[in-house]
Length: 493
Ligand SMILES: [Fe+2]
Ligand SMILES: [Fe+2]
Image 1 (cartoon, rainbow, N blue to C red):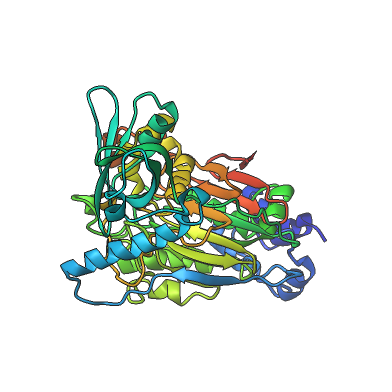
Image 2: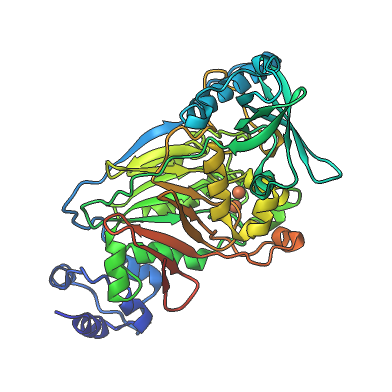
C-alpha cells in the first residue's frame, strides 16, 4: 500500500488531498487498517478539499513509538514551599546556611585547607601566610587601579588588597560580584591581606557519560502561550515533527528517538506581568493559557516524557526558588500523563543516569548588565558564559539584589550542590547557545515568541524563536532544529 492508494481512495469519495496534507501522513501509518476501517466511508455529494481538522480525524497522530528500552524521569531536587512568616533573623540564618554550603566546596581545595576565620586572621603578624573564606561584602577600585575588597565571615570583616600589577587577579575582578563566597590566599599586612590568589567554589570536572540507548532529549523554553506574539506556527511544526507528521524521513527518524522534552519556564505569557499586557494577549486568563498549552502537550506522542518548570511569566511568586506550578491554575497540565512539574531551579535525572539542572534564568538580566566579564563576552548573546559564571560561583544568584528570594534557614536552594550533566536555561529569548564547561553541557534555549514591543524598546536586536536543541544521549551529538524555515534546518553543534 502507498500514499497514492489513499489519494485514489479519497478521490473516489470526492475528497481532494493537498500535497502538504499528504506529507503529514506518518511513515508508520497502517494503510491496510485504514482502508479496512473506512470500507463504508460515504461518498461526498460535492468535491471537498480535505481540511487540516478532517485530516487529524482520519490520521490521528501515533500515540506511542515502540521503545526497546524504558524511559524515566526522577526528581533529584525540587523545592517544596513551606509557607511560614519570614523574619529578619531568617535572612541571617539563610546567609549562614549558604556560607556553610559553599565553604564545604572551598575547603576541598588544597590551598584553602588551612583556612582560618577572619577574627583569627586579624591577630596574625605581618608577612604571615593566611587563607580565608568569606562573602564579598564590598568591592572598590582605588585611583591607582588597585582593588580593595571587604570580606566577611560569621566572625568579622577584613580588607584585602589586589595589586594593580597582577593581570590575572585583575581579570578575576571583572567577574567578581558582591555577596558571593570566595577563598582568599595571601599574606598579612597591616590590618589587611595582600591577595595572591582568589578561589571560586567552582565545579570539578564532570564524567562525560554516554547512554547505551539511542535516545534523544529535546530542549525548548519560553513558549509564552496566550501572547499574541506566541510563535504558534513554529510551535505547531515542532509538535508535528515530534509526532512524526512533519519533516524529511531523516528528520522524522531523529524525532522518533526523542523520548524526553525539557521546557525551562515562561510556559505562558501570564496576566498582569507588565502594564498594558492585556492588549498583547490572545488568551486573557491564566487558566485558558495553561489549558491551551496542555492541549498541545497532550497531543504529543505518548512515549515522550516531559519535564517543565515555571518562569517569571508563570502564575507563581517571583521569588526564587519558584515552587512547581500551581495545581489550581495549571490543573490541565497536571492531568497529563508523562509530565513532571518541578520548581525553578530544579534538578532531575533522566534515563537513570543524566542529571539536568533546569533554571529559567530570571536573575541573568542583572549579571548580563552589571558584570564586566559577561558584558565583554557578549551579554545576552552569551548565555553559555552566564551559565559557566554561575557554575563557578556554585550559586544561581550570588548577589543579594539580583533576584528576589525566600530565606530558608535549612537550605539555600540556589546553591548548586550537585554537578549536573546538562545545565539548561531560557528567559533571555536570544539565539540558542550551546557550549560545555568541565564536561557539563550548557544549553541556552531560545523562545517560541516573536519579538515583542517591550524587547524592541529595550533595544534587543538578536531575539530568536522557534528552535529546539536535540541531544543524543548515546553520542552526545547536538542538533538544533529551526522551525522557522520551510525546510527545517539542522545545525550540528
Ligand atoms: Fe520569556
Ligand atoms: Fe522569563
